[in-house]
Length: 391
Image 1: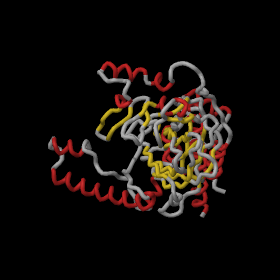
Image 2 (image 1 turned 30 degrees about the horizontal axis):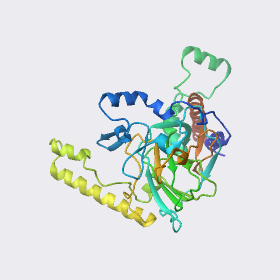
Image 3 (image 1 turned 45 degrees about the horizontal axis):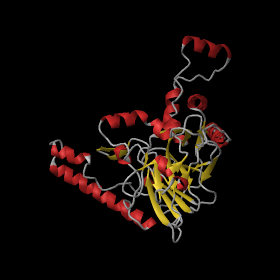
Image 4 (image 1 turned 60 degrees about the horizontal axis):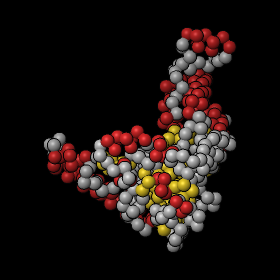
């Protein structure tokens, strides 16, 4: 059996174990934790003359679009809302808040996910670039290949005892452990208050690894979830028996689909033209190509979900942390209850290797995995060389 397969299977089992961290329950009294986390930013915005009683004061206009920079949630109502007014007990995750068991989602066959159930309301949430990261890591086998290839040249097949001790003393123990950042996830919370009809979530990511965390009010019914784009998208705290389809960035590319939207008025291309750095004819050609790509994406999206890709899209270009699907709670007692990641079940694409560990421990474990894979690869290479000589 392939030695690499055995090692990666072992890594997947790490992610499948119960690893439960600690977190606050959200019942403690005192200042709202989200507001506290943004106290420094709030002071800067107040000094700049912004009215911090308005959640819109925390939005920042950038060339890529509107970015959120504070304790606010994206909504479908044309304006943000304060998170503390939307979710009860919300708390940004800390490194000790580890998810629990990892389940699998079967890959979607073909280029057409299952259609939403009849009567469902479609809610399209876009992650942009979420601000928070979590202690959850996942990767495909081939994603480790570059790191393993770099390590093969320096790894030794001899390990243990005096050799390792002398290498440590001499500082020649090989390359530093491969950082986990490339395989670490960012978190996007989705709060659902819509109880008037079953909800089908369409959760769209860019190129990031996004872990979607679901929070639902009483009476909410989820009829299905479609995960679009991103790298190995994952979802936490999803009720049992809710069907999930995945078409990540790789699958979309294989289907010839490109996530694209029509350029906004503040798109960088217009600034390039205005300052003479891009000829008008060149810009016109680029905009035409983008318009065609966006139209193709919108046509496919509409065929699958019955609404356009830009219709009621909830989210910000960068920095988001929570999106609300449904009405803004009219009073505190109606806020969506928060569900933390500690011990939560996470579902990710079938066949994906996962790791749940504190950041420092994850660095060590990922470094050791790369080291072990490099040893296996080097041994196989040397065995092949010997076989060629014998022949």
